[in-house]
Image 1 (cartoon, rainbow, N blue to C red):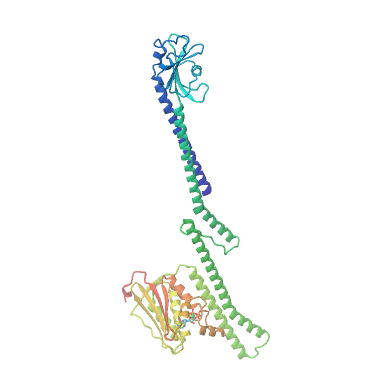
Image 2: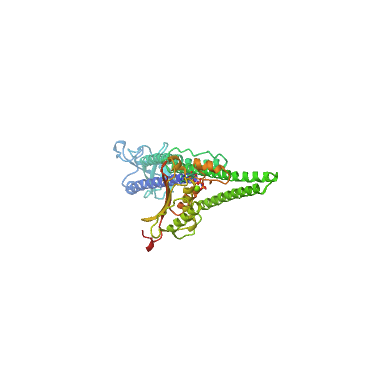
Length: 468
Ligand SMILES: Nc1ncnc2c1ncn2[C@@H]1O[C@H](COP(=O)(O)OP(=O)(O)OP(=O)(O)O)[C@@H](O)[C@H]1O
Ligand SMILES: [Mg+2]
């Protein structure tokens, strides 16, 4: 059942409850008032009136009392004879009309008990009691007008109608208000979702009032859609970049193979050279695919193989590898006597430090010294790799960690066969730091070299030998 239907049902139930309550109030009030009149009628000394005390009017007289002697009364008291003739005893000077007392006798069959009767020949109602007249065939009827009671009840009914109308209007306004503020915006969100499913991907929810719950929902929905668009665009860009990077080495492999098929390489030395180049290209593709897989696995947030890792040892190993690659380079390691240790994936952490050190080798002149270091700082282990190369300008420094971003020099180097990377190293480094709950940052300025700093939490209880 929709919220709208439920609201309508609640409104209908409220109005119905009100109607029942109003009906109960009116009927209780009416019976109270009539009971009051009945009690007063019952208290009348009708027996006395009807009996010997009051004589039957002498012939030629209409009433017992003469017109001038009539008491000023709100009661009508009359004698109804067996022949249905009526002789008023008390004409009820204050009554607006005369009751049809013969009807009262007919209605009760002459037995005592209050009945409601109409006025004789005029609109109006009366309450009457009937008693047999002692010693005769007739009856005595006493009646009081219901005009005031009816007027009071009519006024009560009118008041209740007005109150009911006010309640209905208020309910209607509340319904409209809820509909406008709550339901229609939700319907807009639904319509947007449907439009997007149907292919209109640029469709967004029109948010009228961002302070309402529905407005906030609409805004959050729009933010989510923008977020999704951004991440899809990023993914498309990533796939395009990756394909582009793979195409370059593939093209040259195919080119060499085609030349070979056409018999371009006759002598052995030439052929050896080509095979060497083919090996280099396939190594480059292999490296790229390895990098992409590493990124994909880090993106997926697969659980790491956690161990206690001595970052000091990791830094020492990376420096050792670097010395093997560039024996002439000045590489000075700065480390405490032992540690620092972190809980992490040993292979990933070695990859992270390796990326920073090999970047320092690749992107600085051969004479520039490189200083890899590690230390414990409070709750963190800090690894820095500083070099004295050309450094980077702020725009480049902002982008180094982006996937596939390469500096100008690295880009031109990458063009040649078998040269340069794809620009994924630092992106992987950042993902590894992220996966370990850490951060990576770069301090650099043109002409001042680069200093990459990785901070990792030493989350496990610090070992004795870990304190630095
Ligand atoms: N120590 C450094 N000094 C100067 N520039 C650097 C340094 N480290 C990185 N860069 C710049 O940042 C860019 C991105 O580095 P990144 O490691 O991500 O990619 P890459 O080294 O070009 O390729 P690969 O994917 O093989 O690592 C480099 O192309 C280079 O221009
Ligand atoms: Mg690199």
